[in-house]
Amino acid sequence: MHCLCFILDAAALSSISFDQVTTLAQSALEELKKVEAANKGISQMVIEDNCLRYKLTKREMEIVQLVCKGHSKPQIAKKLYISDRTVGKYVENIFEKVGVCNKVELTHKLLAYEHKNTPHRLFHLTMPPTDETE
Image (cartoon, rainbow, N blue to C red; front, side, top):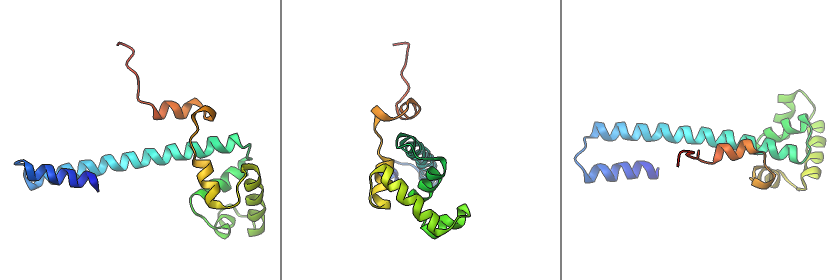
């Protein structure tokens, strides 16, 4: 939203046409969509890396991904073809391994990016490339 306001302010101060403003706004929106998609990918990797850090099993990691996306226990059970009770037991085990008491804490803790404990693949994605020719 701030980006669009900036474009409109710039248009008001210059002599660009409405069509040019529309084109600029569409370009800005496309760039924002790319950033959002990249952030989702990075968040996914942070969660996966933190799951490994807490030594969660593959099935626990599947459940964590769904919990972090906001799915309820019945939704998770249906999606993974297991009972609600089984999901509940997995969630209890996950909470114990990660050291949290609820889904909100779990999501916050697993989304926490800690460079010292995170594999280098995230570091390379988040850091701008360096110019070796300098």
